[in-house]
Image 1 (cartoon, one colour):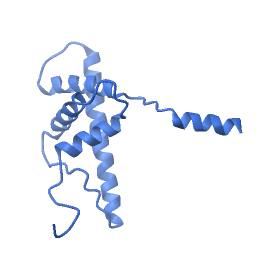
Image 2 (image 1 turned 120 degrees about the vertical axis):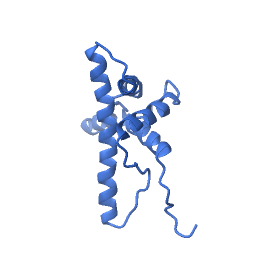
Image 3 (image 1 turned 90 degrees about the horizontal axis):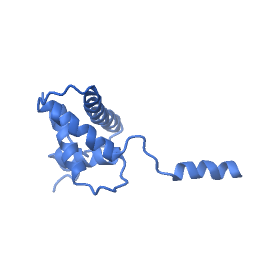
Image 4 (image 1 turned 135 degrees about the horizontal axis):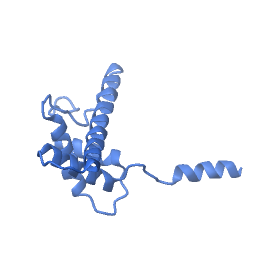
Length: 132
C-alpha cells in the first residue's frame, strides 16, 4: 500500500526537466543567433540550439499527431504552420514573445507555453465548424 502512495505522490508532484525560465533564456539566445549577433561563448550556442530544437521538435510532434488524427477523421486545427524558409526563426520569436508575457512565477510546463505561443502566432484560417 505504501508503494502505491509513493507512486501517486510522484505523479502528483509537478517537476519539469525544462522550465519556462530556461526556455525563455534559451530562446533569447536563439533570437540573438537569428539576429546575427556574434558570440564567443559556446554556452550561448548550446542554449540557442536547445530552444530551436525543443520548439522544432514540438512542432514536428504536433504534425505527427495531426497526421494521425486525420487518419481517423479528426482535425486538431490548433495551429497551422506556414511553409516558410524562415520558419525556425518565426517559431522561436513566437515562443519568446509568448513566454515574456507569462507571469514570472508561472508553473506552466514548457509544452503548454509553446502550444499557447504557436496557437496565438499561427492560427488556422479555416474553422472547425462548417457553415459558420
